[in-house]
Every structure is written in C-alpha cells, then in structure tokens.
Picture 1 (cartoon, rainbow, N blue to C red):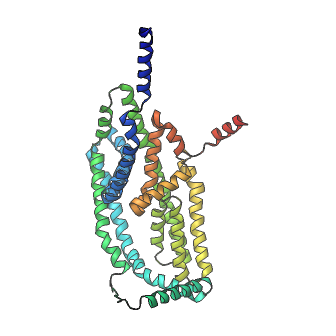
Picture 2 (picture 1 turned 180 degrees about the horizontal axis):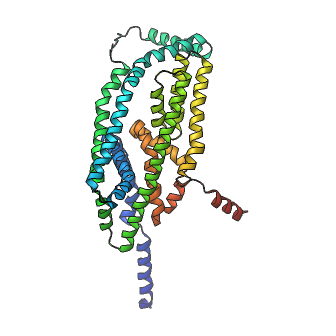
Picture 3 (picture 1 turned 180 degrees about the vertical axis):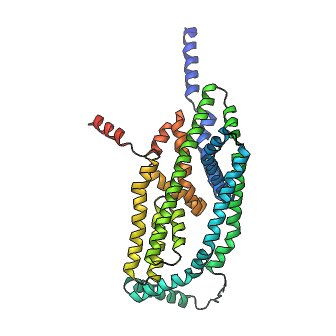
Length: 382
C-alpha cells in the first residue's frame, strides 16, 4: 500500500516545485524597474554625448544606401564618407554664414520686441491689465510681509544675446563631433552589418538580421530624405510669405520653418506663434499678426495634409498618441534636439518591431489604424 502511494507523493511534490516561483521570477519586476530608472538617468546625464551620437547614426542609416550605390561603380567607402562629410560640412557652414547676420540681429532685437509686445498688451487693457494689477498687488503684500528682511538685488549685464552666443561653442562642437562620427561610420562600410550577422549562429537568424537592417536603411532613409526636401520647400515658401508680409529678417523665418517642421505637432504652432508675435510689433496691427499666423498655419497644413502624404506615402503612419508621447519624452530629456530626433527614433523602433517575429504585436500598437483592417474587424463583430 505504501509503495502505491509513493509515486503519487513524488508527483505532487514535483508539480508543486514546478508551480512555485523561482528566485529570478520574484526579482524580475524590481530588477527591470531599477534598470529602467538607471537607463532614464543615463539618458539625461549623457545628453551632451548621446544627442550627436544619435544624429550621427541616423545620418549613417540615410547615407549607407547611397554609399552602396557608389561602391558598385568602384568608389571606396572612405572616399564616399569623405564626399558626404564634405558636402554636409559645406552646407552647414554656408547656412551658418548666411544666417549669422540676420540671426544675430533678430536675437539682439528680441528683448525690445518682447518689451513692445508687453507695452501694447498693457495699453490694450482688459484682462491683461487686470492680471497685471493683481500681480502688482500680490507683490506689494509680499513686500510688506518681508519688510524686515534685507533685500539683495543681483544685477547682471548678461542679456539674451550674450547667453545664446555663449552656447555657440558647445553647439558647434556637437556638430563637429557628429560629422566626424558620420565619416567613420560611413567609411566602415558594411562592418556593422557583418558584425551583427556574425553574432547569430543560425543561417535563418543571420538572414533575418540582414533583412531588418536593410529595411531600416531603406524606409528611414526614404523618410528622412523626403522630409528634408519637403521641409526645405516649406522653408522657402514661408520665407517668401513672410517677406511679402513685410516682416524683418524673413530668411530667418524660412530656416526656422525648415527646422521646426521636423518636430511633429508643435513645430508648426511654435513657428506661427513666433512669426505672429514679431508681426504684432513690426507691422503694427492685430489683424496683420492674425494674417501672418494664418498664412504660416495654412502653409504647414498644406504640407502636412497633402504634400507629405503624396510624396512619403502612408507606409510610415504611426499611432498619433505614441508620436506625441515620444516627442514629449525626448523633449523632456534632450530639450529641443530631442523633439527633432524623437520621430526618427520611433520609426527605427517601429521597423525593428515589424521585422521581428516576437515584437510584431508591439509594432502593430505603434502603427496607426489600418482602415481596411478596422472595417473588417467591425464587420466581423457586427
């Protein structure tokens, strides 16, 4: 009898041990949380290094396919890298030279423009004046309560222009570092692709890795190249429109439209607001400022609703909520530059998820709603 119950007892113990959580399972959640916190801190702490590195790798994905085209006609990767880097350096240098004078003038006039806007709003009265009076009254109450304290006034001669120009060396050094890194990445040829393939053992995994990297190069290069051309056209259109409205330094608004349009959602609104604020002071009229704002918004709307879908297509449609959260997240950790690189990084993640078997569910979540699939699903439910 005892011999008959022994196997059952052993089986029950084995099942209980299999169902009991292992020590790693119990520590998996807290270890993952600690890793995410440390990763976030590292992204914030190393932003000065990671921003140019990220920009360089994005440039590498865009330039790698043209480098292969040149390799087919016998041009070495080193020469291709030197050619691409020289073109980028000359382009950036010409832009900086052409923009230095109007941008410096605009930055120098910015404090006076803000003061004029403040004066016009205070003269207009109404809500703004009431808010101003309430602020002054609150400040007087605080001053009366702190009358016995010693007031220390810190006087600084550093203006906005001096602050911005003091940031120029660091900005130029990041650009130079990114250009040098782009040169080494492109000059390495297919070394990263080869190393990635060698890290896998099975032939099917090697082939899949090549397909994923080629998909990232093709789709990201096509997207960034097309967006850059479209934004350049938008910048020209905005610059001409602002010149026709009579705004000073219209070329600055053109380049501003080119750069800000890389930022989803907020870029066009920021540019239109800045242009309207300048028009409110320089053209001297509320209706003129409204017209400038409407002109800017109409141009960006035409670009976003018609030109970009026609040229880029709808292959890169993403979940709007995820795009907004990505822009907000990278703006939080990397400021303005983070807003620019947020969408390309999200595209790389989306492509990698689409091309990886175990991550396709996440890829579908990152993508936009497919109207045909949505209609089929609704019909099936009905």
